[in-house]
Length: 337
Ligand SMILES: [Zn+2]
Ligand SMILES: [Zn+2]
Image 1: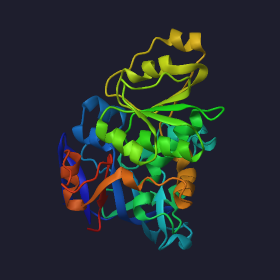
Image 2: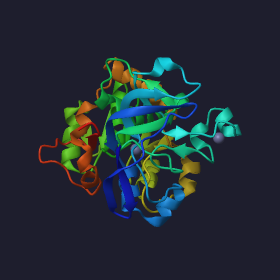
Image 3: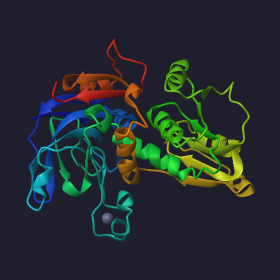
Image 4: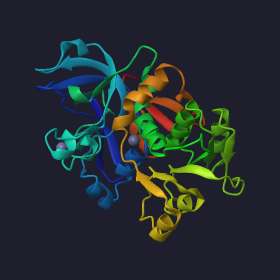
C-alpha cells in the first residue's frame, strides 16, 4: 500500500510499504480522509530535541486526524465493526499502568500516539492499524471531512471544559488557528460569549464568517473582564499575557505549545488566584465532538481550506497549498485519490 514516509528532516515521499495486519485486538482501517496539523509540520521540520521529546524517530509515518472504514478485524474484536465508518483516539496507553487504569491513558508513560509517538504508523496512508478499543463509530450525519476533524475537536472541547466558565463568559480565545476556532465554535454552541484574538486579517475574517462577532487583533481587543482565557497560539509570550488578561480567580487554559520555552512569573498566578490548566490531548472530548458535529450544533467544515490527493502530501507538509484553497487553516488529504 501507499503511505507517506518522512525519511529525514524536511524529507518525505510516498512509498510502497507493507500493509497493516489485523493482529489480535486490532482492526485495519481504510483511511478516507486525514488532516495535517502543527504537530505533523513539526515532525517534518524535525528539530532533534522535539523528536526526542515525542519519542519519535525517522523513518516516520504520520497522521492522527483521520476518518475511514473498518475493513479487517483481528481475533477478539467484535465483527460488527466490519464496514463501519469510524475515527479514533490518538492516545494508545499500555492498558495496565496506574494511569491507564484510572482513565489517564493519554498520559501513560509508555503510550503510543498514532502517527507521532513510539512508532505507531499514522493515517497519511491507504490503511492503518488501530486497537479496537480506540475506535469511535461515526454517525451517518458525520461525513469523512467532519470525521477527520473529531480529533482536533476533542482537544477543543476539553479546552472549553477546562475553562470552567461561570455566568456565560466572556471567554477569550487567543489564536485563530484550527484549535482556537474550534474551541470558539464549541463555546458558542454552549451559549458562551466568545471573543477571538488573532493576528492575520484572513483568520479574523474567517472567524467572523463563522459567526464569531468578537474577532480582534492586539490593537482592537476590548478591555473586558475575561471569565477565562484559552491560549491556542504557539507564541511563547502568550501564556503570561493570558494570565495578565484573565479575571482574578478564573482559569487560563494552555493548549498551544510554543517552539521555545514560554516563561511566566508564577507570582502573578498566586496574586490573582488564577488556575492554569494544561490540555495535551483530545481523548476525553472525542465523544462530545462527534455528538456536536452529528447534531449540527458545531459545523467546522469551513476550517478545511482544501482536500488534496495522497500524492501531494509531502508538498503539503512543506507548505504547498492548491490555488483553489479556501481561507481555512486546515488541509485535508484523501488517500483514496
Ligand atoms: Zn494534531
Ligand atoms: Zn499505561
